Image 1 (cartoon, rainbow, N blue to C red):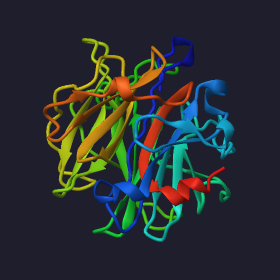
Image 2 (spheres, rainbow, N blue to C red):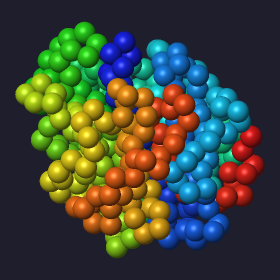
Image 3 (cartoon, one colour):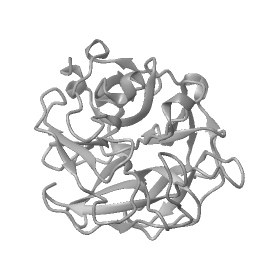
Length: 319
């Protein structure tokens, strides 16, 4: 997440499984719709969790008149940036988000209907590390083989991967880290998820129909050269092993990818943050891409959205 005064926001989104029993790519097209969770730049994300719906996965309209469905109460800065939703096998929704510009914790809350929420908590994902600068754009994925959740995010630690001490955004060099949990009360020791070999943020996992996953993320390189575009890597499981980074499939100055399956194609949305709109590209093989930007309409001022497929009847009840 870059400083708001530069309109250069680092965020994250991702895709998850809309129903516990049925993978998103296999969901019956006539029985589902698309839910977008997002935040706006107003008050740096303090306007809370925003939700929107779409019938085709491209044009989204705000739910609840654009109100905040959950207002941030935890963290030093009390932000709600980069909100990510994941549904557990028992139907409970878990929301994680960036709660501070800089710090070692993230926010977490649960809900059955996305309108009524549990008490918020901070998860101390990076408190065991000296020199940690931030904990950005967390996401959660349920691992059916291990029957637990993996939470992953991006952090910079002074002295790691060329990171140096500094103020705010100075000297950051980001990599993905993760922890595992079954109850969101006890957590495994935080570990490096993998090293793409470059400054990287905004990681999201997409489950593949043939098995395995695709990790989609932003190459944040901007010192030796200007990249700041979206790439992907193969992933055998949520914790890898991971393949090398692909060629970029978005323009420069894009971030916060979120991915979902629509009619047999993986659609990846991305935030064109300097210009204030979302673009998208679709693929069947993660090599050849089709630009879908002309079809995409996100709510005004939306930032870092998470798109997922859910039963249409569930969305119909959200107000």
